[in-house]
Image 1: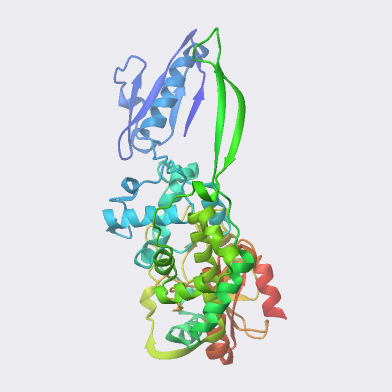
Image 2: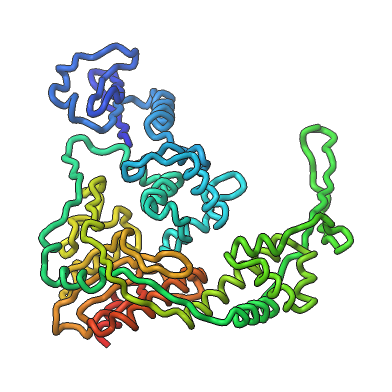
Length: 469
C-alpha cells in the first residue's frame, strides 16, 4: 500500500523512500541512501504508516524497483498450501504441530481444495463463499476458524490489509461481552439450548446393505482410463519450435488394465467406517455390469461407491435416530470473547452479545449479522461457539446463530439457524445435509415445546418468512 506522486521544486525533483525499521518506526532516506534529518517530520516519524514516493517521470524504473522490493519484503506471502506453511502457525495461542499441519494438508487434498501443485482450487473458493466447506477432522475442529483464515490468506490479497495498517489511526482490538449478554431474553434462550445430548440409532443392517447396492446400481458411472498421443514436428528454421500435427485419444480396454491386487473392500470400509463384512455384502449385491466398471477405473469406482454408501447411511440414520437430553449443561464460559478480532474491520454489532462479528465483508456470516442488527423484531443474537455442538453419527455439528425475538412480534420467540450461501439442497454435501436433518429431529422432539425452532436459511429474509408464517 503506497502512493506515488511527482513534486517539482526549483526545477529539480526529490525522491524520498520510507522504509519500515521497526514496529511503528519509519526511517526516511534519500535516493542516495543518506539519512535525512528526522526533525523534518517531527512526531510523524513515529506515527506515519503510509509509504510515499515523490519522484519525477524520469524515475519510473526506480519506482518499479521500489514496488517490487516492497512487495517481496513486506507483502511476501506463500502461494501454495503445503504442510510446511501450516507448521508452527499460532491459532488461539496454540502452535500447530507437524502432525496437525499434515492433517490440514490431507483435508485439503481429500476434498479437492488443492491441485497437483498445491495451489488452492476454485472449488475451495466456491465452498468458502457459499459457506459449504467440508468439515475438518475431529481433532482440528477447535482450530476451524483459524485454519480457514490461514488458507484464505494464501489466495486472498485482502488478508494483507491485516498486515499493514494506517498507523495514524487507533486500532481497536478485543471483543468483550456487552450488555446484551445479560439481557433476560438471551439468558432464557441460552438456558433452553445449553443442554448436552446423546443419540441412539437402531436400524437393520440389511436395510443399509440393500439401499446402498440398489443406489449404486442406479448411479454408478466411471470414465474409462484414457491417454493422449500427441504428434509434433520440429521446425526446420528453429530447433526449439515444435508444431503439433495431431492428437490421438486412446481408451484402454480391459486387457490393458492393471492386474495388480487392489483392496477395494478394505479401502471402502475404512472410508465409510463400516465393517469389511458389511462392505463385502454390498459388493456381492451389485449387478455384474456395475461391478465390471471397477476394471475401467478402479479409483473413480472406489470414490463413487464410498459417496453412495455414505449417502445411504446418512438417510438410514436420519430415519432411525432418536435423541435424549443429558443432565450435563454447557457453561457460558464457552462464549469466549474473540480478543484478536480487529473491531475496525469487523461488523460492529448493536444487538449481538459481542461488539464485533465477521471480518470478511462479503461473507454470508457478515450479511446475516448486518440484517439481524437492523431487524426491529430481533432483540439479541449471537454466533454459537464451537464449544457448543450437537452430536450426530456423522460427527459433531455446531449451528451458526442463536436469536431471541421480542415476544408478540413473531410466531417463534427463539430461533437457531444454519446460514448457507444457497438453499439448493443439491449443493449440500451428503454428510453435511445429514447433520442438519439430525439437528432438526433433535429440536422437533426435545425443544419444540419451548417455542424454539431450528432451520437452515440463506438470509434473514428467508428466516423472517419462517418465523412470521
